[in-house]
Length: 329
Image (tube, rainbow, N blue to C red; front, side, top):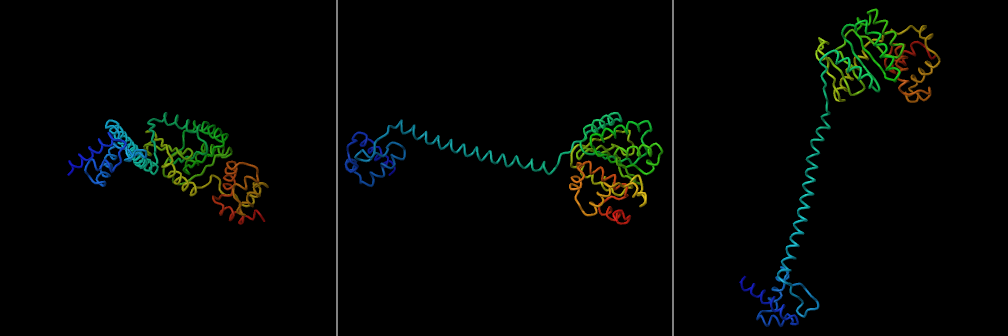
């Protein structure tokens, strides 16, 4: 049946090619087949590109050479293949983008921490000098051990002055026994005058120095500072260390105890009283800074000094202390 059908197709192709003026009915009669079979043969020839419809031809078709038909057929297949390859490329790109995103999401959850080892005291000191010179906002340090050598105190005070001149907030926690050493007591008094904030505690858990919010320096061996230190870069661990420092700071004691009411009244000037009244009324720091015509950073240092003089830590304690002393009556 298939061979017969193929012979009919070949015969019709030859008839249309040799007799372009015949009608389809004439060709069906010549081929001794029905008109329906003639239509089927023409449809099959059109499908492989050997015939193309033509309104001007009596039979409705014109022939195409086998070579041209084959070229057109391959061109169509090539276009389909190219379209398919482009579609695959788009899918591959989308999948690669999706897969590539997962490691990045994982990395975002796992913040990177870089640890730099400083194995000798000389390297530690050089690193601390560099870190202090590039510090932008604040430096916080905790010293649970004994006092530094007395010959270093002058250099420490010079560094404090330099950082204060750059607007860096400096906070220090010392053990109570260290602060009672005469030369350290004198140093801390001088340091407070230039803006350094210092407190003492009976117990401090760990020696550390924190620069801004992304650098911490910790001893390799807390029992032996001579073994060097580790510099930890990255906010992930620094946040936890700042939280520990905050706890120690708020449970520590200011260097100077709260003064009695009479002494405080003599120490506080008109600006202090204005700020205390605004604090007691719940005015925000930004509004207080605008009222005084100073920056938020300057206000922060000013407020720390003021609360230290009152011997308190929080706004609520300020309000209680002010009411207790009757400073705003």
